Amino acid sequence: QLEDSGGGLVQAGASLRLSCAASERTFSSYSIGWFRQAPGKEREFVGFIGWRAINTNFADSVKDRFTISRDNDKNTAYLQMNRLKPEDTAIYYCAAKYYQPSREPGEYEYWGQGTQVTVSS
Image (cartoon, rainbow, N blue to C red; front, side, top):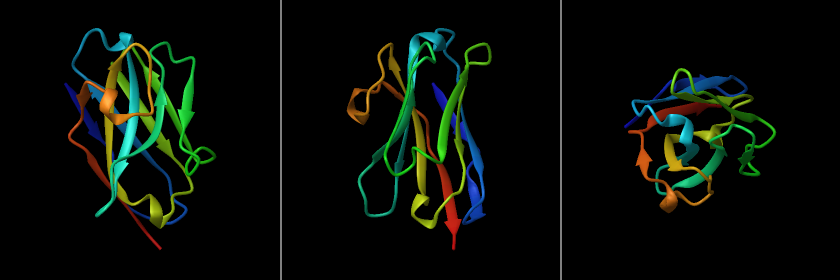
């Protein structure tokens, strides 16, 4: 089970950090992906961090502004979002996939409930 949190309403240029907390004790065996869905749009890939935290990968739209980290001792992953833009407004979801990460949402087994991020101009 995943619980994502940390969303909110911010102005353009601000930062937010989202958290993804897992109840699963084998959290360290799962890669964590972050996805987002804006109104009227399909869910899209934001970034992932591999299960060993060695590799990360990001969508072109965020790769110079967002970072992902994880603390396996706390069973928690983080999405740090900097220099937010109005087009980043969406519901953000974290997801877990056993071992190898992926950019495809359909390959993830567990999902958080989502947290709303709204960026005003």
